[in-house]
Image (tube, rainbow, N blue to C red; front, side, top):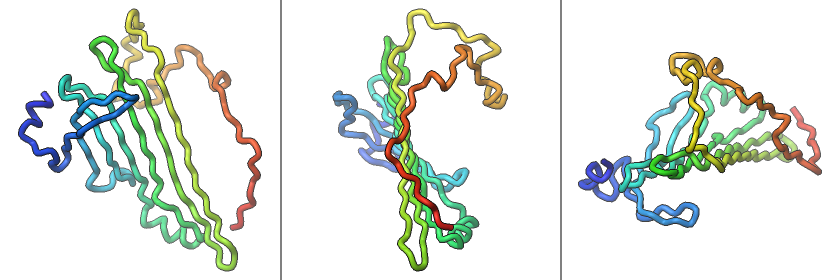
Length: 192
């Protein structure tokens, strides 16, 4: 029980922090927040984030996380030789859950990627580029009345490789997905 674990903790202690208010979609409730941060790099990345827990139900209502790609030291001289500067790329994500009956299901997932690059020239103006992309997934309908059972041979097994466990039962393809195409953008010649 979250309440019994945190009742003797101060409002802030190392990795735990009790939030005053959590406002999401116009609703405001008091939650426990657990802040975390990696102490060292894992797979060339540094991780940090926050987990939102409802103390009355012990349910996780949301997770915010962010990871920063650390450019390996061995790559930096190569980038310097080509006059390239890359700020540490950052990605962040937010996952929110919704309660249906007595069970919590994913409701909203948002991911953003940011990177800043600069190409330096000796006697010309530097090229500055900022890249930003964002993906938002909203789950609008969850079938809780008559869900289909997943066949035993198609259930996830952490011992097997992920690509062997992805099934396209609905025969979906990307041709049915709406796409946006940039209009009025001009290609710029890159000098090397």
